[in-house]
Length: 275
Figure 1 (cartoon, one colour):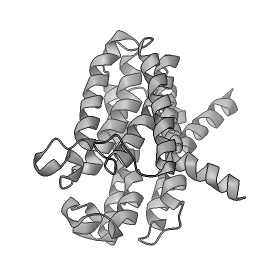
Figure 2: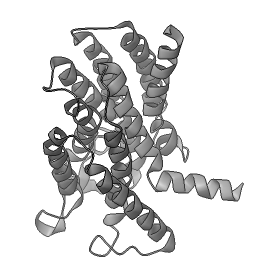
Figure 3: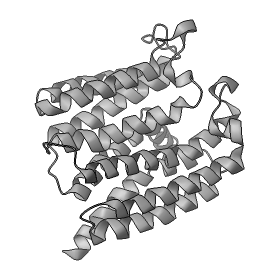
């Protein structure tokens, strides 16, 4: 049991779980927009997500963003390096029209993590910007990149899906923001710090309602997205409702981050059922 727990913790700490969540959202985009996303882009996003997330998580603790202190983090660092090499290899097989957006997302991620501001600060440390940047990068990586890899232009439905994905990630961040209230620096001025837990949850409910209603703005609305997003809407409402300051260890890090996988699974089940 101890070995299984160690493997599971490494799975979470090495950002494999969050990378699977991002990977699943790319496929949700493909299913929603009825497009065939290149396999190279799936692999690139999955392995690049592991590298980027671990760099953001552990880079701030490392000397010059390279040298980490303990053996466990070094193992994650070497694993991340391997994933980065796989991601770089996949770059050679990506469509040319994704590289501009890829560059924009890379710059935003770099500004988020690297100390480019005075007093060795990064954009992550600026008041209120943290969750907006994370949501924007997730929306860009899981909707814009797969869309431009296939489509010649960003259509109205792609814009709606991007806005909806942005809201979706904001909702998922609510439990994390509340969980980290005890640890975050007061300078971050996160939503729970400024408004309190109760008001933050109310904002989460509002975001969830908007997330669902935006579905009906699409031009070619199908039954599958409505059914799937109705179930997802109820799930998000329940998760925000159950979110508390004192959380069980895996509530946010596993169960909340598994919601994108649940969304993908709902779509797969629906597709199987109607066939």
